[in-house]
Image 1 (cartoon, rainbow, N blue to C red):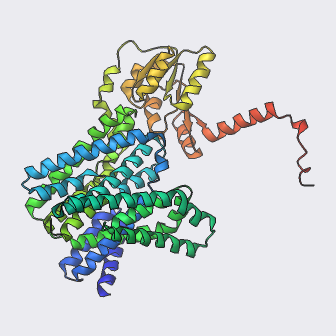
Image 2: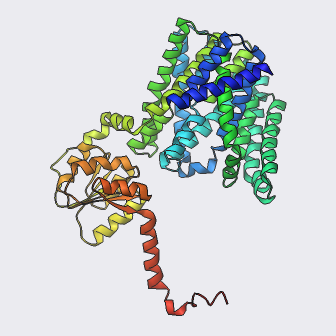
Image 3: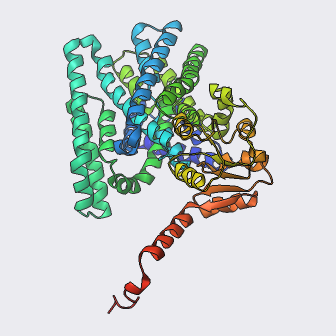
Length: 526
């Protein structure tokens, strides 16, 4: 009990310091665990149990965010990106591990640990930035779901290979059976239990935890990692609207287990040697340097725009919670040394911490300068006296048709090759490029346009047009009043989507439904 109390106290102090200094909480939590371990203040078994408990709950919560239906029309692209990233990053990790002097078994563990990306980090970033339902956000969700399933299927292969083909086949079949049971629960069981039984909050929380323990029990019975059962239990609860109900019950518990897990992980690690630090740095660089360009190439071929593909690559450039699961299993089975688990943990934590600083609009905007799409910029004299349409997705296409009907000269800028091809087939001049890039705006004649209409989703993307085309009227699509006020403040004219939709409805209402034929406001009450 004293060990648990000290663990909680260390986590509380680390979180307090993080809030006071505004530093990232994860490294401070791990430092608190390291300090407690150096002081020999709690037994090793307490740390091991706390790591497993915290990791199990975190993977459960991460699974709740991975509703397969949320992937939408990006299923094919997600499958291609997930498979290529998983195989090639894993292969690069294997070659790097062998080059660093690790034996074959350890190299395979390191390769599998490097192959998948973190659901916990990526989903939180997408939620914070309100990008969860953008095309590249849907693709990333699908990639995370598939990669986690790949790891679950391959853990039995890796751990049971010394036992023979039969043991490996049994483990893989068990993982497939668990996934099928999770899908059945997602489709039919959980919607009935959570929604139709109309449980109170206490009963609902008990049902959620019972589902977690049930799938963990099935995983144990199938000789699979308990964490695999926790992940499948989370996915089983991820459907709409079940996932929203469940998340509301688990928010506070999730933060608690995050703190416990990283504090215990810090105490569980052995202090790395200089050689191990160098090895961890090399493997982290493999993930950080290979993942973004790889995902960008595959994402673009799957239909994403260059900007979206780059953003997806930056978001996926870290290792996963399942990397720690892989390392823990190898450590328990004595197939890897404690120092190797420390390397896996260091790579995971470092890449997780770096992701919010790397996966930003500024970095994506900088990287797109080196993209081959720039060869399309500046191929001829800029147009003049035209309407410049920045972004021409589904809604922009309707606007383009309306402008053409009224005889306006329109020039389109979009980053999606499919959109550009469709626009050019309609004999509308178009430029493939990023509408927030000053060079693209110059080539599109932004200074000489009669009007600029921007339907780009991110508020920050409009800044370049506002700076470069002063004096030109600029209409900007926005989604809330706060953004509308910011746009007005820098000289743009915001068009709030909700207000425009309401006006369209009222125009249809007045033109279609004659008020004289409707009952008086008080008639229905009588």
